[in-house]
Image 1 (cartoon, rainbow, N blue to C red):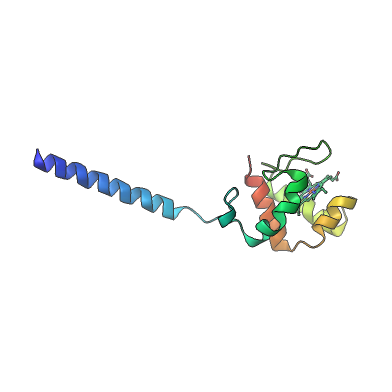
Image 2: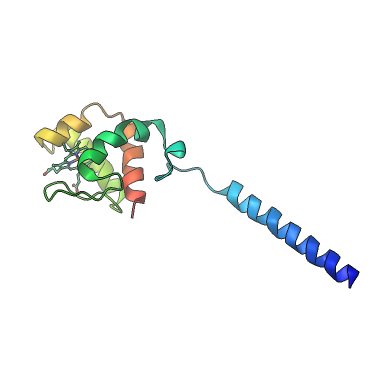
Amino acid sequence: MKSFLRILVALMLSQAAAQALAADGKPEVVDGGNPDTLSPHVSTMLPLCASCHGADGISAVGLYPNLAGQKVEYLVKQLQAFKSRERNDPVMSSMAEPLSPEAIQELAQYFSSRK
Ligand code: HEC
């Protein structure tokens, strides 16, 4: 009985260790939701973007598109197009103007990752 308990405890400990590993092993991505893990680009711009598109990319206004779940490549392309005014919208072109390529990529990843 004693050895059974010992095995049980050993099993529980190894499982706890495995879980800790899994939590640590999580890829460090541009994580949405948790403000502590947002990239600087995203956390700087998000309040502005969110005022129209919603913090989770779901907008409350009919003319402001939802961005949540949209493809990263598409969002990047649109932001680049606004910036170059190939897609010219008075509001969004001025929003995209100051964005660096990194900021565009990370904002696109952020909004794409929202559900
Ligand atoms: C003042 C409101 C406003 C703010 C702030 C704003 N947007 Fe927009 N956004 C719009 C509008 C309006 C459109 C649609 C433009 C059009 O009709 O072409 C748009 C379109 C977009 C699109 C294209 C979506 C699609 O489906 O084609 C992207 C991507 C986008 N915004 C990202 C952002 C990001 C990132 C920020 C922050 C840097 C931001 N927006 C800030 C109003 C806003």
